[in-house]
Amino acid sequence: MSDPSNMSEEERMAAEWAAAAASDDPMAAAMAGEGEAGTTRVLNQDEIDSLLGFDNSKDGDGQSGIMALINSALVNYERLPMLEVVFDRLVRVMSTSLRNFTSDNVDVSIDSITSVRFGDYLNSIPLPAMLSVFKAEEWDNYGLMVIDSAMIYSIVDVLLGGRRGTAAMRIEGRPYTTIERNLVERMVHVVMADLSAAFDPLSPVTFRFDRLETNPRFAALTRPSNAAVLVRLRVDMEDRGGRLEIVLPYATLEPVRELLLQMFMGEKFGRDSIWETHLGSELLGTDIDITAVLAETAVSLNDVLNWKPGSRVMFNMKIDDMVHLRCGETNLFAGKMGQSGGHIAIKVEREAPAMRTQDEDDLG
Image 1 (cartoon, rainbow, N blue to C red):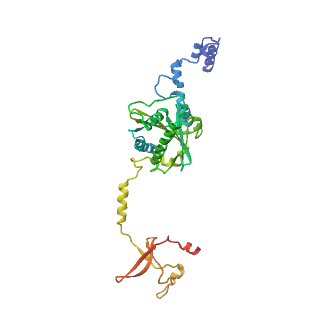
Image 2 (cartoon, rainbow, N blue to C red):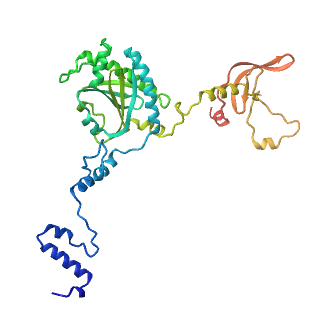
Image 3 (cartoon, rainbow, N blue to C red):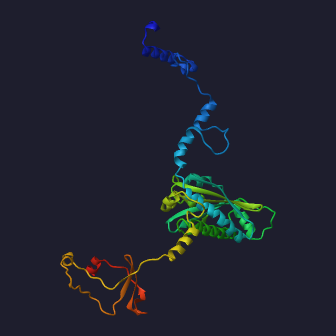
């Protein structure tokens, strides 16, 4: 046995590990290599659960630890500020449209706007529910609207004359009838028209109802791992109501992505109608200079330099040819030249065509 004081640091650490490996005590093995500092500590079960994200003591759907790191890369996407304005406008428009549709007091509110994986959302839809697939015509892609059972029975109860003050009767465990499907489809058409109106100030788009499904497996619009925007809407009709959820894959929003990334100013998407009206009225009262062009001809620079007093320039023009009126380089009108009140005047007869360049004239 060698003297520990004469051993090198590497030899001393190797001896400690060998002694720990030969020991049957697991705690001794865990504490091996601790050295003289004594800073190594064994984690208890609660700390291990918290590190792995299995801590059940936290409320809500928030994740922590390693699970949060894994999932954050999959569900965190770029924020679209203008999309919040679009759906805020949708809420206001829907409140009026559904009020007219149901003849009842309707209040629509936004619960949340989040990013989800499309496959995870389909697996989390509480059944029974109706899934309405719609197409964005101008964007050539699809979206999904999910109506939960509470909303379905509330709409059926309201449209068929159910009494106020009583909750809608829910009969679970059976497929939806044709009447229920038709009534929900009518409501979906109303919401689709409102969604199109909400996007109009940003980018005109027509959302067209495609089909109504009851099985999420038949409503797969994109790959399960693709990202989508989930908007949860709450519809309250006094003591009745339910939820509407609109899912728009990021691929559907790609044609207007640059517009949705813009920061907005006010609820009019940056437009000020008062300023536009004032500017238009002021422009109508602006003075401009109008030039009457009798004729034009192309002359080489060499001929111009050879001009002398008395030189003549020939124009290919007749007495009844049109005279063009211009503002700057823009042709405005064409008319005939004459006299009025002892002054030379031009009678406007038609709008002038776009001015052609000399190269175009040579080619023509």
